[in-house]
Length: 368
Image 1 (cartoon, rainbow, N blue to C red):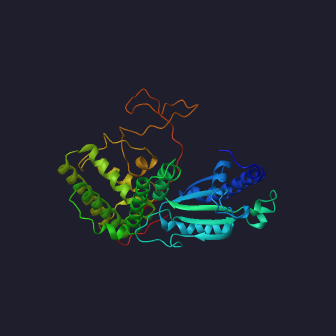
Image 2: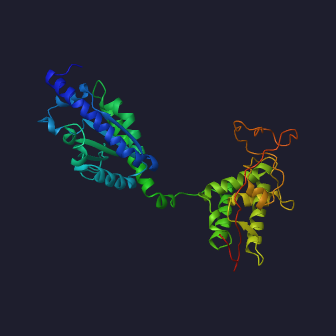
Image 3: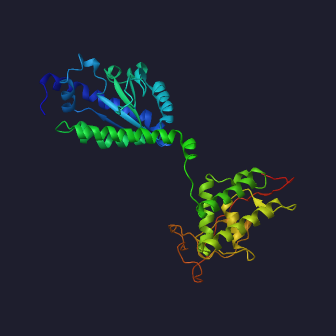
């Protein structure tokens, strides 16, 4: 699309400024977004899009344009918006903010209403860069993952289409209504889930028992806090997978898991409690229970990450299925050799720091 010559000249003058502004914003916000799992993307408005926008008559002067450069930060839910707004306020000079409740909207209308933040570079940062950097107003949109999906799907299909179609506009509004409903359910997830009718499912009940048993032992001081899993859900899944490796029959599998749980509860709550290491993982303790000859099951078909804790602290014997690490360059040992091949050279292990153990139970003293 052709653009007026006056606009072409002005755009050529401002484009280098926009590119440097883009680099500055990226270097400022990427370190904030990345560790939090927020998605960041940006754009510089191209000449054709800018020409079409100005022909709409909405702007009276160049300084009124507020999205020559714009970026979007995608967050999991609206609860994260305040942290992003605070970061923007700290990093740039805020001109105005339009949040979700700023614009009047009839209750039966569904349209884009994400958080929009407008600002400029701070004077001290702009003074160190090329002239004009501090005068460019840019737009920041803060959207949830579902809003971003809705906007990405409908933007080109509806708002940049070659015709005006009532049905497409209607469908876009209906999709936005669905997005709002999803966001509402997520925001009140705990309350909403309580209204869900529950169906019986043995696997869920077994995993609940696994979490209840081991978290109860830890909360009562019978297991060291250093072994607390980062996710109890994942721990329960792993215990279930372990037992499933030697018992696939549902009823027998449930009995085997309950047997392991009773054993752990009995020996850790006894008057002479078992010795549980500070180091390693709680799952390694479960592995040691399953490996005992007097418990149902074995480790024959379960892949295990071998480590010094299993052999020195839990006295675990031969591990048939070891997790295979890549070959070490320059090593004389083949770490991918199948276990049980007596011709494979033994891999010398690095000296590990001494691991601490704790006698846990009523009145027991632990050493860090």
